[in-house]
Image (cartoon, rainbow over all chains, first blue to last red; front, top):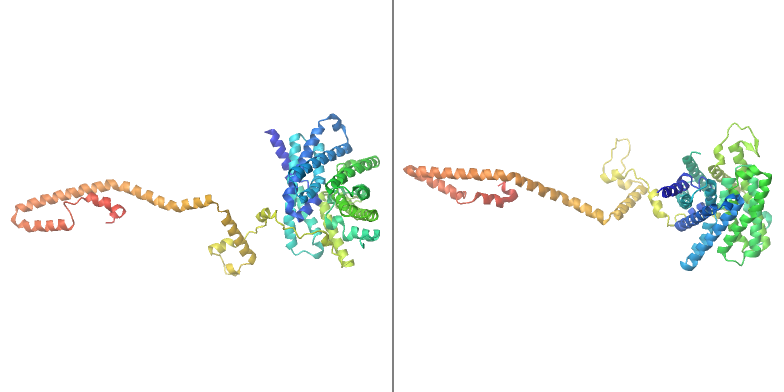
Length: 192
Length: 371
């Protein structure tokens, strides 16, 4: 029961309280660009969740080894990118050979795997000293945080497009300011 | 071919201003908003980004053109981390405090979306000269933004410049948070757009970020829950009542704003769809309920009426016996014969005597009481 509670707590924390996109700025480019073309939002969020969770858990398992724990930030960076690459290749193999995935999905897979959000999750776990359930929770939370952020930005974009903005603020300037307001809101939840 | 003869100057103009990847394409934002909080971190970020751009794009142009795209993406990330190692060690030696502050972000630059995008757009499709021009110009554009954001955030957020206090009366500490970075990017983008419109009116930076598919479905079903406007006039329209004190004009349904009518119609359709068979069944049982209640009430009444009915019957029997006695007494007198005849006639007329009163009550049912 406590394992489940730890996992849920970490997921809620990563998704709502410390939304990694708004309060950390991780994966913002992907979220903004995805919100402009939200057709594959669910698939993208799922893959981000998959990569962040699996990389997060494997990296925490590696942390149990004494030699790995002693490594510095660069050593950890190499470990994390190696793990992420391995997870990416395995997922790709499964998708291509077993599930006969579409080309479009495969193209998106690279973006879902190699972005600042997915790579930040193992770093956060490493710094916070998360356990395995917490690592699972933070991985799931990262995927949900991405979906939530994309959804919120998409709602804003739809309204911004219809609204009567000054010419110079139309497009990305308005998007950035809108994201800034959302980011301020999430920072307010954390009480920073 | 015209594109191939792109000069560094044109490339820089395009990347730094007209097609700035951060400002107008929303690429590579994470390091800018998360890391560029001071001039020192901006320098570190700029150096790492520039070296990574040039080296990875060059490597891609020379060696990765033949590989599949899905594998190239992996190589960019691994190369980025490998290039980061000596740079990290270098900065750690000369600026250990700043490096420690941004330690988590430095490896993240390796997966900067801008690197992958430029490699895929330019490096795999063009010769080395063109790739190099793109790498340098993209770096200049990126560095330009990083420096502006880093400097402004340090001055406003920390009240310092390159670590030296400026003794400013006001300090906006929120500027060092990501929201400050986003806000600043928004205003810089707006300012850059104004300059472009003024200096290069033929250019349109908005085209760099395609917004034509934002309402492309998939997300719409969820969005409709949030985007449905509350219609404050709906209840008034449906009930036909509107409290009007005479100061405001009465708004007729047909005169109502189009959006309210549309919202009302949408809501009605939504409600109609949501009516499940279970709800319909419940509604039907609600309609049958009054009938069932009525039947129960009548049964109760019947029960209450039963003793009263018995008393009526006994009373009626008493009257009949009394009448019989009167008949016998009058028969004994001579002038009572006419009276007896009248009584018999009346008995026949109202069916008294041989008829059974209880049967009358039974057949009458509900209306029996009234009869």
